[in-house]
Length: 286
Image 1: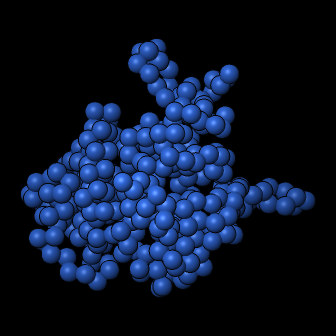
Image 2: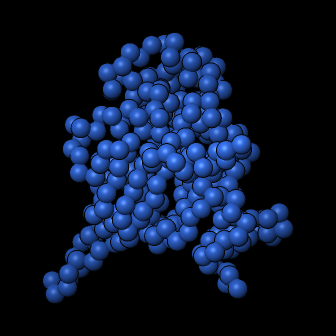
Image 3: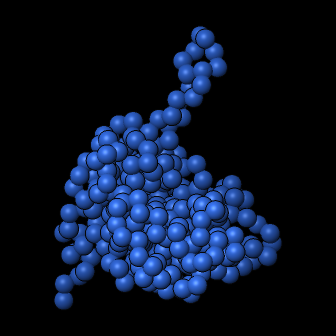
C-alpha cells in the first residue's frame, strides 16, 4: 500500500514562500543616524501542499503573524516571493487579487474584535459573499451556522450576545462562506477559555477534513499544533529554525529553541505551582 505522505509530497505546493524578508522602518530619533529598522522576517521559506495541515509555532514577536499577512496579501514583503496556487502575488495590485480573496480566508485570534458589533450574525456571515458579488442567500447562512454548531436563530442576534467560543464559531462560519480552498487560522483559540478550546480545535479539524481544505494554523503552543497539524515550522526571531512532521519535531526537537518550546508545555504540576509559559521560556534549557 502506498504511503499517503508520498502522495502528498508529489503534489505541487499550494503556497510557496521563498526567501521572504519584511523590514519595518521606524521613525528617526537622530539627525545624525539612519532610521532604525525592525527585521520582522529574515529570509523565510516554506511550502504547503493541497489538503495539508501546516502549523507555524513560535512565541509572540517571532514574525508568524507578519508571515500570515504576507501570504494573505494584507502586507507586502520587502523582498522574496510568495506564490499561491501557482500565481506570484508578491507585487500584484489589489484589483488582481480577487482570486485570492475568494480562495483564501482567515480566522483571527480575537473573535470579538474581528466581528462588527453593529451587524447581526447573519449579515456578518454573508458579508464575504456580498463583497465578492455572490448571492447571499439565507439558506447558505443557515447551512454555515449548522456546520459550526449554532442554531439557525443565532443569525438574528448580535456578537455581544454570544460567548467567546460561540463568537469564534461565527468567525469560522464567515471564513467558510465563499467556499475557500485555503484556511488560515491565526491563534484561533488563544483568546478562549480553556474549557472551550478543545471544542473549537475539534471543529476546525473536522471542517478541514469535511471540506478538504488546506490549513495553515498558527500558535505559540506546540501542543495545540501537534493536535491539529501534519507538519510544523518553528519560528524564532523572524526565521524558521526547524521544520518537519509534527510528531517528529515534538518527540525529538533538534534546535535549542524548539527544545525550549517543548519543555515550556505546561504540566499539571507546573500549573498548580502557578508557573506560566512565559516563565518556562525564560528558564535555562540546560
